[in-house]
Image (cartoon, rainbow, N blue to C red; front, side, top):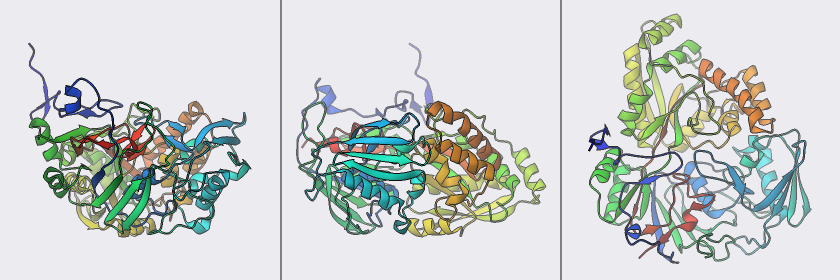
Length: 533
């Protein structure tokens, strides 16, 4: 019998494996051993250890990762994203929609009898109010740009609402998810510490800013489990606690202080997969999110395109993944999508070439290199480790870099204000071509989401044309040109997607991993989790 080939760090392919579209469990599931799935139970409190705390839960203003995770528990959108890596759109509060032949009018039929957490029934006025609140400049919503092409939101009757566009807008259905616009009751003015009621499976109970969030079961939630017919959710409550250090999260899970966490130390993941720990399950889901380098193109020396290109030639992405992620990752090519995504644009990537990198630095006026400082947010060990790897690689071409780590809210403000030179950061998953590029690279987003402060009239026109083009087959050629410009100008240097180990006690059941770290997505998430104890 042929010996099984080993991939890395002494692990066989069977020990380290993940495939497109599904997470592979690298531990024994007791319920599978008995030959039949158990019927889900109601009740119990799920204790989650998270990497961050929330600075507030105004669903139209606060958009850090934990906030968006929370919104998938508390709220619904008109549409909902499906599993990675395709992230197709499905009905959520809208049970169906019709699109006019010119792509200008979208008419949505709402689900009837859906209740908000305070008892009011959802109707079209709530949808209109929520969308217009995001669109209102006074709200200062980071997602307002996604709705720039909406001309009006019109109530037809109690259960029908029509969105009229200024021109066709290809990613409209994507912009109607919780990630962009949670539906809240008409007239409600939430604050960071007093969020609006939602229609989601869990009710907000309490928030300690930057520390903990508590949710309780919504007994009148509208959705049922398609396998059992049971009304969702199963859990009585979810308690989310900030535990910034991944080693502490791992220790807390092993000690039984929490039930579920993610992004534990990669070395610990490898050891636990080679030598399974009784009572603990480790899963490697689909790669998610993105790591990239953001250049402030208005600040020397990064205002020189050749400097940015030199850095691109100097960074070895495979080495970065091995050294900072212990191999738990996948490199990306001039864009934030995997090569198996329907949104991937096949453009050749640069190969590592240190001689070329040094030549470009010399041509840019830095033959001996220069000193710089990477600006990095606290809380993500993979970002910090990745930055250290990049710093080491850049020394090979004469760039002497250091790293400044600050709290994430302060980091985000400085980035938005352009008060930095270069940053390595992690980003959440992009769910549409427009979502991937417009907010980060259009000149109209400078001071908002375009933190590279990059301005290119040709790119602006392409991004405007891309979002105004309705059919995907017509959008792809437009975005091919977008990716070609990104590769040449490099306002952003895309590096890798992360396979983020998810770990839970083996009595945590029903958690599928179609959307990796998301607490909710079409067909899965925390609404289906139950505790077998």
